[in-house]
Amino acid sequence: MRYAHVEISFPQADMNGQADMKREKRVKLLLITYYLLLITYYLLLNSAKRCITGAAQSAVLPETRGGFTMDSLNDIRQRVEQTLLEYTKIPYAYGDLQCRLIVSKDSNHFLLITQGWHDDVQVHGCLVHVEAIANKVWIHRDGLEDGIADDLLRAGIPKDKIVLGFHPPEVRLHTGFAVG
Image (tube, rainbow, N blue to C red):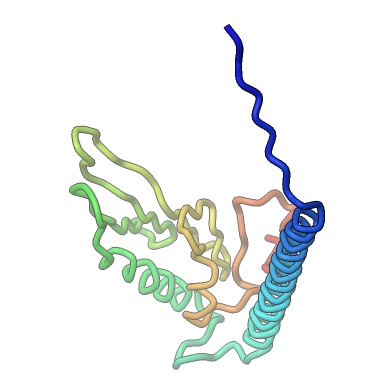
């Protein structure tokens, strides 16, 4: 069996011209992508600086905010409970699930749990475990998407009263929060 051999020829100038145009388009796209990445990086960097600056300013504010004094363990307990109660009001988008707040009798332990059913599987797990110890808030478990520490800061608890207990002590030194 013989195969036919077909040869297509284009004028040389046209092939080089098309290749040059394709190359120029690729270079332009790469430059645009590069500049978009630079702009995104710049925006993220400035956003992070504002967050850090804002958090540092809130840590400098006096210990009395919103009528509470942070010297009292009861004030800390009340703020933690109010902050976590807000999460129990958010409905789940799927399954028959509920978010519940459990507070120990001495009001030192706060557990935010998910409980219910998703299809035919029982769901039961701890999202957040916070403990009030010696005028500080220890976060032992933080399974929230954005983290509970920022919510506690917004509630008026300063950074030097919040301990990220889920990090080892040597890491806590670098978080900007209390070490222990």
